[in-house]
Image 1 (spheres, one colour):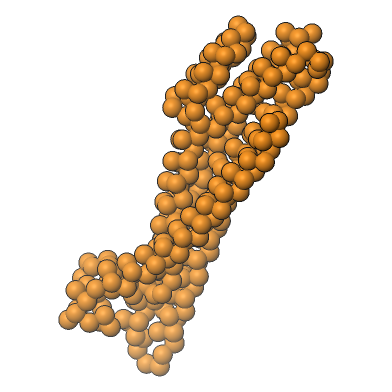
Image 2: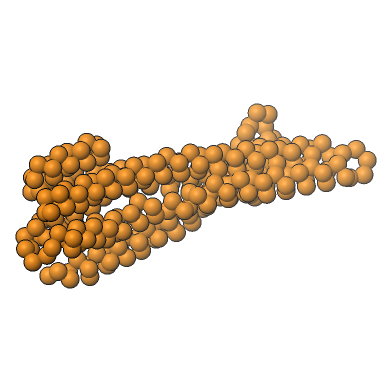
Length: 277
């Protein structure tokens, strides 16, 4: 019986990891596909251009046509921009679920009061009500607290180590779920800017090639080149900006949960050590 959690928990962790990897892979592909569709069929709609011809200039004030003429890097940037929102929303949902049904800070304080009062069963009941990652870790520590308290053959030092180990193992299973896909957002911070810079360079190449022609410069080609550079720059900066904001918000939420887990775990260990000297 004692070995059962050690065999099932890694299996659950692996299953969760596989489903998370599948979601990330599908989300990336789908975002790029949607980015291409938006660029090709929405912004590239003939109604956005003079005489309904994509080769002509966009209608005056028509930003869709301007973005379409910004080049093939635009759909990549649109895909990256969509990825920022998809992964940010997915992480927000997961982290909010991990927080449980109530305020985490209030939950930890209530658990501390119950533990200090020796109401371990009541504390376990509160964990069942709260749910989430913090409650799961606290509950595992409390259950181990009861087990070692009932085992009179263990000395206090070994019991404390057993409780700490149980909390650490449960935390190790919960934390990867919270941090999964955060590396995607971190990567988008750099990739968005670099891709936008690539579009800027290609646009400037077109602009300078228009100036390099013999005779009068091709004003239409020059305008398209400058427009491509600026649109790609703006989209790349927007992608990186949102990625940075969401990454910092999510990291702060994860740090708050981690601190709550550490605080509750420390209270469990300290209370046991104080009551079993």
